[in-house]
Image (tube, rainbow, N blue to C red; front, top):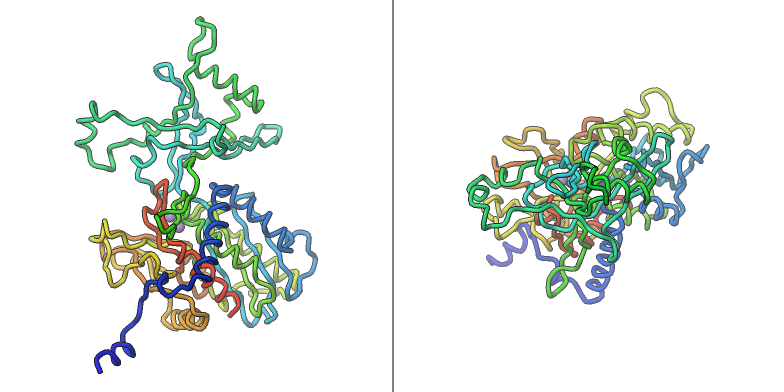
Length: 466
Ligand code: MN
Ligand code: MN
């Protein structure tokens, strides 16, 4: 009797792999291979958007700028300054009465940016000075191979694209750390103070120009090389955006190859799974919108971040080109819409179990996680999804056999976090956070489960085809 009752009454949270047959396993592994290949070509927001545009073009999407009219079934996108992108498929239902189904992720990830005056020479070595981007543990970014990505824009408008350190025959760069023999003082420091921000200096060269009358001869030699290759001078760094990211590739992790280790999975794992889901959609009932935003890791500000009105502009363009726009319609459409804020969640790490409440943690391999709310210290700053909406999302997932878990980011008062959820919620949209649990989040090498990656793909598909 106990067993029967238990079966009927207890909430189930099952490990996913053991219920997966060989054919499904193959499908999961194949999807993960495609994901890893994409990650390796899309380590920065600009590269992600470039790859996403290519995919969208191949799948029949058009830049909304080239459309004068829209109708059900049309597939469009808008690219915002090469760093964020919105895609949409016009639904058969009237957008004025049914709103949109939105999935929103971000394509920026924690990294090291070059300072505007980066180049210096010390002790016969040339360095780039950096300023870190997003929440990092600084010690994790020393003594690993780093690659340099980004753009340098000259005053005549010419844009030089940089990508050094990804090909096997490219050089890489690194940030040195103190040898243990001389690190007594450093080792006594708090972990957060062990490596200082100003000391995140990238080692970039050591050969001087052949003229001993000159000062800073190594720096001069570096500039000579850069000038020969890219036609730039030191001043051109002022109008550059150069980012350092780990040079290693995304790889399968474990004897069983059940996981993915890779840089930037926060939040490219949700960006990729939602983008792929959108690429495989055909006709939809409700207008489906996919957001790939920038600047989430530093607060979503600026004109490529989600706080900007650029997204409103895109939706207004859709309403204009559907020939339905009128005063207040944009507000109305947002109020009628539903959204999954597709951002990663903290995975339960048995090595650090003390920060999690086991009953409310997200486990790798148990499917996508839903965060009803985020925030910290008594839910401060949280966007809290309404129970009615959570029930609606549960029903969508359960009807499509999507494995999900509902979780909190860590124990009460231990920390917290946030996503872009509140931004759309503030416009009146029903929003819940829904993403993939990650280990070592924000580290140069993050870990996810292939089972959860595929669950995300299935979850996003079910949300859009509901
Ligand atoms: Mn994130
Ligand atoms: Mn993050």
